[in-house]
Image (cartoon, rainbow over all chains, first blue to last red; front, side):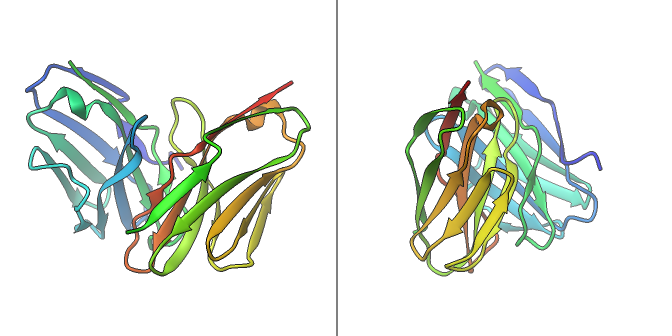
Length: 113
Length: 110
Protein backbone atom coordinates (compact mmCIF):
# COMPACT_ATOMS: atom_id res chain seq x y z
CA UNK A 1 0.00 0.00 0.00
CA UNK A 2 1.66 3.22 -1.19
CA UNK A 3 -0.47 5.43 1.01
CA UNK A 4 -1.93 8.77 -0.09
CA UNK A 5 0.22 10.22 -2.85
CA UNK A 6 0.49 13.96 -3.41
CA UNK A 7 2.31 15.86 -6.10
CA UNK A 8 4.29 17.98 -6.39
CA UNK A 9 6.08 17.96 -3.01
CA UNK A 10 7.18 21.54 -3.45
CA UNK A 11 5.83 24.29 -5.69
CA UNK A 12 7.17 27.80 -6.05
CA UNK A 13 5.15 30.10 -8.26
CA UNK A 14 4.73 33.78 -8.97
CA UNK A 15 1.71 35.73 -7.83
CA UNK A 16 -1.09 35.54 -10.37
CA UNK A 17 -0.14 32.16 -11.76
CA UNK A 18 -2.38 29.09 -11.71
CA UNK A 19 -1.37 26.28 -9.36
CA UNK A 20 -2.68 22.71 -9.47
CA UNK A 21 -2.09 20.28 -6.64
CA UNK A 22 -2.77 16.57 -7.13
CA UNK A 23 -3.78 13.71 -4.87
CA UNK A 24 -4.20 9.98 -5.27
CA UNK A 25 -6.10 8.47 -2.31
CA UNK A 26 -5.72 4.96 -0.96
CA UNK A 27 -7.61 2.46 -3.05
CA UNK A 28 -10.98 1.61 -1.50
CA UNK A 29 -11.21 4.77 0.59
CA UNK A 30 -14.48 6.58 -0.07
CA UNK A 31 -13.73 9.91 1.65
CA UNK A 32 -11.14 12.42 0.50
CA UNK A 33 -10.19 15.61 2.37
CA UNK A 34 -8.10 18.64 1.47
CA UNK A 35 -6.48 20.56 4.36
CA UNK A 36 -4.19 23.56 4.54
CA UNK A 37 -1.60 24.04 7.31
CA UNK A 38 0.05 27.29 8.38
CA UNK A 39 1.88 28.27 11.55
CA UNK A 40 -0.74 30.88 12.38
CA UNK A 41 -3.93 28.91 11.74
CA UNK A 42 -2.85 25.28 12.05
CA UNK A 43 -4.69 22.65 10.01
CA UNK A 44 -7.83 23.93 8.30
CA UNK A 45 -10.31 21.90 6.28
CA UNK A 46 -10.83 23.22 2.78
CA UNK A 47 -13.21 20.66 1.27
CA UNK A 48 -14.13 17.01 1.43
CA UNK A 49 -15.63 14.47 -0.95
CA UNK A 50 -17.60 11.29 -0.45
CA UNK A 51 -17.69 8.86 -3.36
CA UNK A 52 -16.27 11.62 -5.59
CA UNK A 53 -19.06 14.09 -4.69
CA UNK A 54 -18.17 17.33 -2.83
CA UNK A 55 -19.93 17.31 0.54
CA UNK A 56 -18.60 20.34 2.41
CA UNK A 57 -16.68 23.16 0.72
CA UNK A 58 -17.32 25.77 3.41
CA UNK A 59 -13.60 26.00 4.12
CA UNK A 60 -12.62 27.02 0.60
CA UNK A 61 -11.31 30.59 1.08
CA UNK A 62 -12.79 32.18 -2.02
CA UNK A 63 -13.60 31.68 -5.67
CA UNK A 64 -9.92 31.49 -6.53
CA UNK A 65 -9.91 27.97 -5.08
CA UNK A 66 -11.57 25.01 -6.76
CA UNK A 67 -11.38 21.25 -6.21
CA UNK A 68 -12.44 18.32 -8.33
CA UNK A 69 -12.57 14.57 -7.98
CA UNK A 70 -13.24 13.11 -11.44
CA UNK A 71 -12.85 9.52 -10.24
CA UNK A 72 -12.15 7.49 -7.12
CA UNK A 73 -8.40 7.55 -7.60
CA UNK A 74 -7.66 11.20 -8.35
CA UNK A 75 -8.38 14.68 -7.02
CA UNK A 76 -7.06 18.15 -7.78
CA UNK A 77 -6.99 21.44 -5.91
CA UNK A 78 -6.55 24.47 -8.13
CA UNK A 79 -5.73 28.04 -7.18
CA UNK A 80 -6.20 30.68 -9.87
CA UNK A 81 -4.86 33.31 -9.55
CA UNK A 82 -2.44 32.53 -6.72
CA UNK A 83 -1.53 35.12 -4.06
CA UNK A 84 1.31 35.24 -1.49
CA UNK A 85 -1.18 34.59 1.34
CA UNK A 86 -1.90 31.18 -0.21
CA UNK A 87 1.58 30.04 0.81
CA UNK A 88 1.11 27.01 3.07
CA UNK A 89 1.41 23.24 3.18
CA UNK A 90 -1.56 21.57 1.53
CA UNK A 91 -2.47 18.07 2.67
CA UNK A 92 -4.73 15.50 1.13
CA UNK A 93 -6.15 12.70 3.30
CA UNK A 94 -8.40 9.73 2.68
CA UNK A 95 -10.56 7.55 4.89
CA UNK A 96 -12.86 4.55 4.86
CA UNK A 97 -16.40 5.62 5.78
CA UNK A 98 -15.11 8.87 7.26
CA UNK A 99 -15.25 7.61 10.83
CA UNK A 100 -11.85 5.99 11.15
CA UNK A 101 -8.52 7.77 11.30
CA UNK A 102 -7.64 9.57 8.13
CA UNK A 103 -4.43 8.71 6.30
CA UNK A 104 -2.62 11.86 5.27
CA UNK A 105 -0.28 12.35 2.36
CA UNK A 106 3.13 13.98 2.71
CA UNK A 107 1.78 17.34 1.62
CA UNK A 108 2.63 19.96 -0.99
CA UNK A 109 4.56 22.98 0.24
CA UNK A 110 3.35 25.94 -1.82
CA UNK A 111 5.26 29.20 -1.93
CA UNK A 112 3.78 32.11 -3.86
CA UNK A 113 6.23 34.97 -4.44
CA UNK B 1 -18.96 26.36 16.69
CA UNK B 2 -16.61 23.46 17.46
CA UNK B 3 -13.43 24.43 19.28
CA UNK B 4 -10.29 22.50 20.14
CA UNK B 5 -7.61 23.94 22.45
CA UNK B 6 -4.37 22.13 23.17
CA UNK B 7 -1.96 22.83 26.00
CA UNK B 8 0.83 23.39 26.51
CA UNK B 9 1.95 24.77 23.13
CA UNK B 10 5.41 23.36 23.72
CA UNK B 11 6.85 20.87 26.19
CA UNK B 12 10.41 19.85 26.86
CA UNK B 13 11.04 16.63 28.77
CA UNK B 14 14.07 14.66 29.74
CA UNK B 15 14.18 11.06 28.62
CA UNK B 16 12.18 8.99 31.10
CA UNK B 17 10.24 11.98 32.49
CA UNK B 18 6.53 11.18 32.13
CA UNK B 19 3.95 13.89 31.42
CA UNK B 20 0.54 14.60 29.88
CA UNK B 21 -0.74 16.71 27.02
CA UNK B 22 -4.20 18.26 27.24
CA UNK B 23 -6.91 18.72 24.62
CA UNK B 24 -10.01 20.68 25.64
CA UNK B 25 -12.93 20.66 23.25
CA UNK B 26 -16.44 21.90 22.66
CA UNK B 27 -18.53 20.20 20.01
CA UNK B 28 -22.22 19.83 19.31
CA UNK B 29 -22.40 16.05 19.49
CA UNK B 30 -19.09 14.18 19.48
CA UNK B 31 -18.65 11.43 16.93
CA UNK B 32 -15.00 10.89 17.79
CA UNK B 33 -11.83 12.47 19.18
CA UNK B 34 -8.61 11.78 17.29
CA UNK B 35 -4.93 12.03 18.21
CA UNK B 36 -2.24 12.38 15.56
CA UNK B 37 1.53 12.69 15.60
CA UNK B 38 3.28 14.95 13.10
CA UNK B 39 7.02 14.91 12.39
CA UNK B 40 8.68 17.88 10.63
CA UNK B 41 8.09 17.86 6.89
CA UNK B 42 5.57 15.03 7.05
CA UNK B 43 1.82 14.57 7.16
CA UNK B 44 0.03 13.79 10.43
CA UNK B 45 0.13 10.12 11.42
CA UNK B 46 -2.94 8.60 13.06
CA UNK B 47 -2.55 7.40 16.66
CA UNK B 48 -5.95 6.89 18.32
CA UNK B 49 -9.68 7.47 18.07
CA UNK B 50 -11.80 7.76 21.23
CA UNK B 51 -15.57 7.67 20.95
CA UNK B 52 -17.07 8.04 24.42
CA UNK B 53 -16.23 9.44 27.85
CA UNK B 54 -14.29 6.98 29.96
CA UNK B 55 -12.65 5.29 27.00
CA UNK B 56 -8.89 4.71 27.06
CA UNK B 57 -6.47 3.48 24.39
CA UNK B 58 -2.78 2.62 24.59
CA UNK B 59 0.06 2.27 22.15
CA UNK B 60 3.59 1.66 23.41
CA UNK B 61 4.43 4.61 25.70
CA UNK B 62 1.26 6.55 24.82
CA UNK B 63 -2.12 6.37 26.52
CA UNK B 64 -5.12 8.48 25.51
CA UNK B 65 -8.12 9.14 27.74
CA UNK B 66 -11.40 10.96 27.18
CA UNK B 67 -13.90 12.86 29.32
CA UNK B 68 -16.90 14.92 28.22
CA UNK B 69 -14.80 18.08 27.98
CA UNK B 70 -11.20 17.03 27.43
CA UNK B 71 -8.76 14.36 26.41
CA UNK B 72 -5.30 13.63 27.73
CA UNK B 73 -2.36 12.03 26.00
CA UNK B 74 -0.15 10.51 28.67
CA UNK B 75 3.45 9.80 27.72
CA UNK B 76 5.21 7.34 30.02
CA UNK B 77 9.01 7.26 30.16
CA UNK B 78 9.42 9.09 26.84
CA UNK B 79 12.35 8.56 24.51
CA UNK B 80 13.95 11.08 22.12
CA UNK B 81 12.14 9.40 19.22
CA UNK B 82 8.82 10.53 20.77
CA UNK B 83 9.75 14.11 19.88
CA UNK B 84 7.09 15.43 17.49
CA UNK B 85 4.02 17.65 17.37
CA UNK B 86 0.92 15.96 18.75
CA UNK B 87 -2.40 17.05 17.28
CA UNK B 88 -5.88 16.57 18.68
CA UNK B 89 -9.01 16.76 16.53
CA UNK B 90 -12.76 16.35 17.01
CA UNK B 91 -15.34 15.02 14.62
CA UNK B 92 -18.93 16.10 15.16
CA UNK B 93 -22.00 13.98 14.51
CA UNK B 94 -23.07 16.51 11.88
CA UNK B 95 -20.31 15.60 9.44
CA UNK B 96 -17.02 13.85 8.74
CA UNK B 97 -14.55 16.73 8.84
CA UNK B 98 -11.91 16.79 11.58
CA UNK B 99 -11.47 20.08 13.45
CA UNK B 100 -7.87 20.24 14.66
CA UNK B 101 -6.21 22.00 17.56
CA UNK B 102 -2.91 23.78 16.96
CA UNK B 103 -0.89 21.01 18.56
CA UNK B 104 1.68 20.51 21.29
CA UNK B 105 5.32 20.45 20.22
CA UNK B 106 7.12 17.85 22.32
CA UNK B 107 10.90 17.68 22.63
CA UNK B 108 12.46 14.79 24.56
CA UNK B 109 16.14 15.22 25.34
CA UNK B 110 18.57 12.40 26.19
